[in-house]
Length: 245
Ligand code: IPE
Ligand code: IPE
Ligand code: MG
Image (cartoon, rainbow, N blue to C red):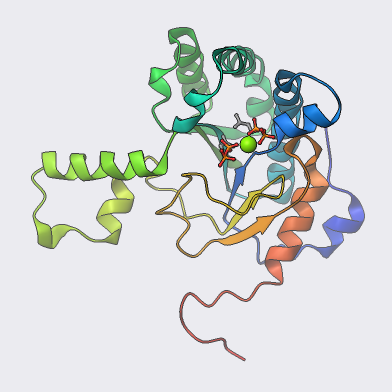
């Protein structure tokens, strides 16, 4: 298990933890390219980090996490890369069940993951079922996820439900999102130095703090998560109001 070092653990204020940390796991391809390796090996290495980060979230007792694993736009990549990614998801949704059970992690999915190959959908649904009573961490995986598509889906749903215009408010929209019931992310971490949102949680990040690190995703470990949380705890969040100072 990749544990957070004691010196970093001491710097964390456990009374002011973020409720929800979301991750744009970016830079697998560049990590591999820099080492003269095929991009696919970067994706394989990236999965190990997802494991470290999940363990880190559990160690910090953070209650909600979201990992952006495959966007609706990622279908535009070469066929070979998409099918390699499918194989990696396939293996990991079968093999990582114990990790979730041992750490008390409840799985949920954001996005149209049901458009993935049938065997992957089946193993995801099994994992959702076996982890449904876990209480340490609710982990959302955004798979075949696009935020604009999510918003369109909500609009269609509320029209179909016969919602009246005066009934439309922030709460109604939130309740109809894939993320229904999850707190909005307090902290969003993007690796590999890109300052963009790439169609991720547009509605939910209205007041999220953004942490961008130059590290590629395969280099981002539990200690890096702790550093990001320490950075977050030094931020002054105003939510449009004025500071108390
Ligand atoms: C993120 O790494 C993983 C997915 C989008 C599936 P990338 O594959 O985007 O890596 P870079 O950005 O090309 O380095
Ligand atoms: C965002 O990364 C999607 C995931 C991490 C799954 P991308 O690599 O697809 O984003 P862009 O293309 O650089 O914006
Ligand atoms: Mg990328």
